[in-house]
Image (cartoon, rainbow over all chains, first blue to last red; front, top):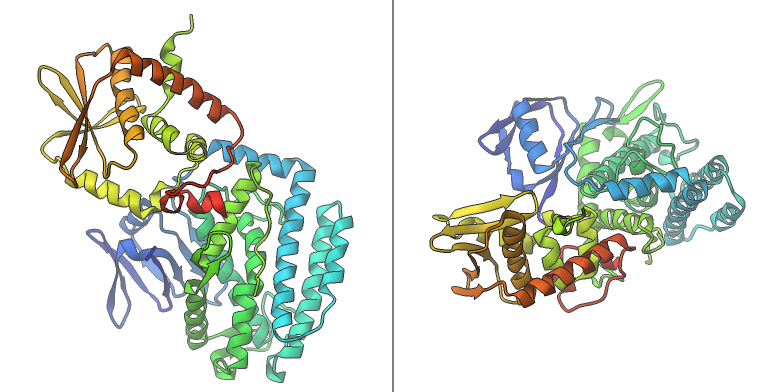
Length: 322
Length: 171
């Protein structure tokens, strides 16, 4: 598995010459060897031809697009080649059978919350997340589960302020647009992990539109939203704390206006570089007894879901054990 | 009247997997395929692509059997190219199944089967005897049963770690 993510930060053209894709911008022409691409993340404005799309589709490589502000716009999601009607039926069954849906929805909240607790524990910050989480037992509708999730997240972000330096306080979580530096980092990171997870789902037989915690009607690949929840604390929040506390990002890496605050090009570069490093970082997996990357952990999560849906092993969300 | 033809919806790979692992057989039969990322499978494909280039290759029938190459003479030679001799029985029956399929579905019975191992320059001949036919028919029944049942729990085998399904099975 030597394929890697390509992050295109500047404006440019994707061109196909024979079976190689080139990224051409005002400064140079860079080949992207087709066998080496896993996904492409496009942050600049990108022009490309259908020949490029045909080649990427053939190789099953998605492109994720982000707009001028760094928000997720959409993906070129190549034609599905991994189709399993039997699994799709099971996926739908677990959505339609309300009790089955609730089980999965709770697991996503549980996994996310436990990982948040790990993040806080690392910085020795006391928190009531465990208690709030225990209320999940009594929830029997999705809105109640969402409510518990919302309260956990609100408390969690509040606690992060205890760790963060003064100029990087969250205050209140603001999304569209993010109103301060830390909010803009969270938004940026969350849309990134969403895309990364989508790439992983693409490489399985799971259908990305059928989800359990989030409503499938969200006009998104909502299964990716479900699975991302678990990895946000691990891959995004820890990264943000790291970048901020190490002072790898400062005021100059943001573009500010009256209403919004966004990472500028240099800020994005720093963030993406460190994010990619984390995706590649490996840990020794306990069950598999082998080294797996963080990116692979997301795939394994999809595999665990497949087995849950097929009824062979109950899904247990990934929780950091260190 | 129901004929034996119903049996022969089985694909060659399924016969092969039947001897290797029933969990893998079940996944594959339900279109949960994993081969696209396995380095060993890619290696196999490269060997396949670069061997016997002068032969009549990749002869597929009815989306069911996919013979690596065939050679016409007094007999019709059916060749299957394999990387190593490790899974001999699985290879043998996959090949015999092709012969069986040709005989019962297509009425072609003057056939001979060969397994070629280009890496070790070895070739083995196999014949479809009535014993083997009977054995194959037993296998058809067993495969149908496995596929129709719930996913079989994986059983740890020495070659698990090299299998493309390793993570799916054991995570």
